[in-house]
Length: 294
View 1 (tube, one colour):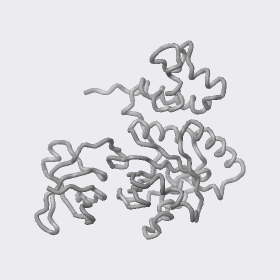
View 2 (spheres, one colour):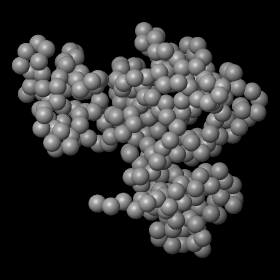
View 3 (tube, one colour):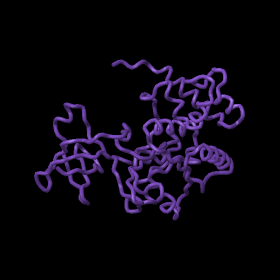
View 4 (spheres, one colour):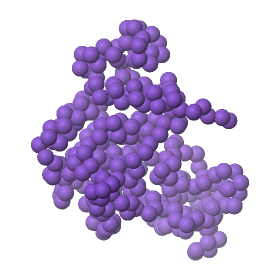
């Protein structure tokens, strides 16, 4: 039977791309009994009985999956953050980085609205960009009507399935409008009262951009670490993970242990204090989490 990629899911129907065509499919009833829910990004096997009558018969193994947005087999995530309106939050950025790192997704930091930021916001952003680049992250900066945006993103997007994610109002829809003007996604205006944009994206869809596939995602501001254990968190702060082998004790949590290479690096300014503070806060959040019952 033929195989294809789910590129869109709306109201119980799955749109599967196969040999250049998009075929509307239904899921097998047995999927519900087995707790299987096909997701955008899934490679599936389907059975076609007519031009407009096809059923997904098998969902292939996934390398990862996200709950919000509901999408599977993501290669990388463009973490879109604005320098202003809303101001750049390293706490929220680190939270996103931990989540995508824990799922085996490659993060790319994308900063927007540089052209309208003030001197203070630019200075803060430049310091942050310098640090995140130093520890190994790719960081891109964009502005409105950026004619070179597609060319700068092409090497990152080509051959990959990418997700745009970030806080509401940071410019994800604007970014996609620049990449694909024919989409004409409605851009949410910033609510001065709430300090966040209105939801403008109604479903997840994979779109062809620069030789790859990109999914737009609804803006959201809360991320939890339900799937991350206390001892795992240190692995998702990449500069701390590299230093862990130099700690005196194996399994060092970088708290009060003697001979901790991470704490020494913080004191010497090699690890950004705010990154370490965020690590401690996330660790406490995981520690305080209610135990999960099977």
